[in-house]
Structure formats: C-alpha cells, structure tokens
Length: 73
Length: 144
Image (cartoon, rainbow over all chains, first blue to last red; front, top):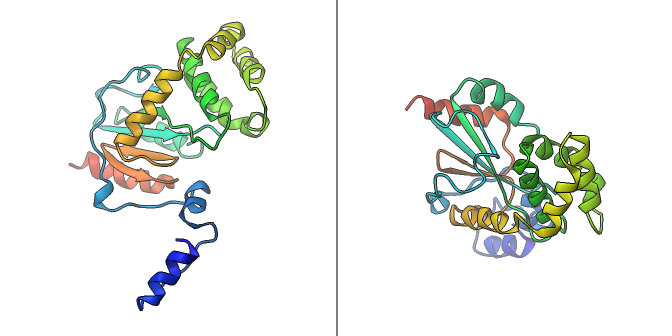
C-alpha cells in the first residue's frame, strides 16, 4: 500500500503495517504475486470468443482450462 | 508467461489435462502493447500465433521503445517464416484491433485489472505465480 494508506492504518492502531514504495500500482507493475479475496472471484466469460483457436494449446476436452491475460510489453 | 509455460506445457497440456488459452490485455501505459497484441493475432491468422508470442516476449527490449513497431514486427514475421508483407498490412489496417479490445473487455468482466492474470477453471489468479502454485491448483482441480 502507499505511505498514506499505511499512516491511516497506523493511526487506527494497527501496528503490523508496511508502506510499499510506489504503492500497489508499482507492486503489480513489477509482476510480484498478489492475491485477491472472494470479492474478486471471476465471473464466467464466453466459452469460445474469436481468437481461441489460434491462441489455444491443448485438448479442447481437457478437464482444466487456464486463460492467461497478458501484455507483451 | 515465458518462464511458467514450458513446465505446464510438458506436464499438463501435452498430456491432455490442461487447455491453455492466451488472451491479450495490453496496458494503456505501454505504448506499443496494443500493436504487439495485434501482431500476435496477425501471426495467428497465418498459423503462427505461438512463435510470434514467444518472439515478442524474447525481443521485448528491442521494440518496446520504438516510435513505430510495424517494421520490427514485419521483420519478426519474416524471421519466423511467416509472410512479412501480410503482417505489415494486417498491422496497418488494424485488422485485429477490435478483437484485442474484446479480449480486454472480457478480461475486465472476469476481474482482470493487471498483467499477468490467469483464470484457472474460472478462479482468478492475479500476478506472476511460480510453477509450483499452478501445479498445486491444477492438481486440486484434477482431484475434483
């Protein structure tokens, strides 16, 4: 979190608080792992949008599907 | 995920347990990310999505700062044995611009806000995870 957010939590009495240089955005941008709670649980996406055929590996009948969202840059 | 895919591919994709789909999520503050995404899909139209995918990641430092990536990406297409002129036309016409936008929209609908993000049987994973975490989650799904 940002220094501002850390100060607010400390002001509320929390002690195990650390500020991240650059905040959440910098952490994410650096590619470090993050996890989200239940609120961010995925909603279904269409099973077969255009492009899947060229950008898919493996059997269409496989029991597990992994969809990667990435940026090449 | 250049580093994670090889093990997932060998142990799960090639054995029929995992289907792996790549979708583009170019970030607005990466000036050339949109065209890179389009280039991958343009290559896909020629049957070369994954070679271009690998090339774009491997050569990232060579093209990320360019003012115009068309020459570079057409060159990569040629190096990969694809039709460089067709790649140029594809990029200049923006043939896959709408599809990239659709992929972003679908990602956002699924909760994706940054890259890399993954949906493993619909479970959102945000960030770059080690292979061991993919393995754990895949095995958990296979055990269901």
